[in-house]
Image (cartoon, rainbow, N blue to C red; front, side):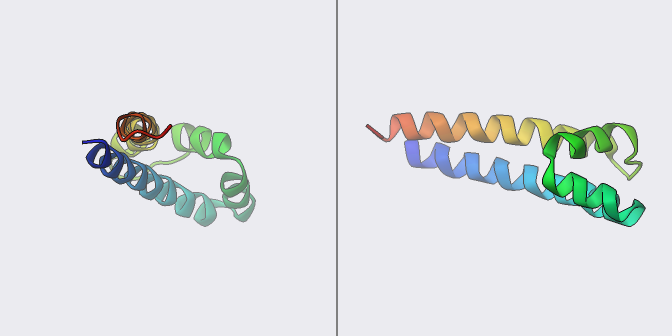
Amino acid sequence: MGAVLMILGVVFCIASAVCSIIVLIDAFRNEIWKGVLGLLCGLYLLIYAFTEYDGDNKTMIILGILLGGLIGGALMGAGGAMSGAR
């Protein structure tokens, strides 16, 4: 059961990374320095997503970034604890 939770957590983390890459591509298209700053500082990428990103499904992409990482990390932690990582 622990391995299943860990795999599911990885899927959520990959979804979060894909959403982040979508916003990062938009930041690079807007200005090069915004893309570099978003690449180096995840907090700026999140601020950029809230303030300047105007793509389709903006709300879903922001929720994917936030909840995907949060749920993915929680599932991987729970899966690691259940699989007997001592």
